[in-house]
Amino acid sequence: MIVPSAAKIAEKWARVTPERTIDYEEGVRNPLRDWETETKAAEPRYEEGIKAAIARKAFGKGVARVGTAKQKSKTISKGIPRWPEGVRVAEKDMRDGMENVVKTLEGITLPQRYPTGDPRNIERVRVIQQALHKMKIGA
Image (tube, rainbow, N blue to C red; front, side, top):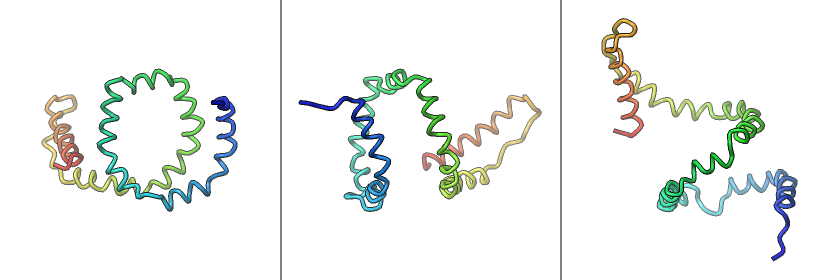
């Protein structure tokens, strides 16, 4: 089978794909299938895939393949410019996500505080940790 080179495929993808914003938006607004329904139905496949990835140590191999230099370069070139707008549009999500955290923390009565460095102060940390963990797992 005759196939274009990886370089040619990548060049065309980089040239053509940015012009397909309308197609991207159309696909997001009017998907062929419902995201939530399909994602829930995929849970067994997700679990199977995660277990297989763990067994073959895929995470660590992927990290080694990419390396720190590429991770840093891509984060700087893509992440930094997108950061401010991403944070701005996520304000409501942050507020919604923090509601239970704030309620949980407000409901805590901390034990007595002792002088700085006193090992009994760790009990205060334990109370906070336990409350937040229970909140997270829905206990």
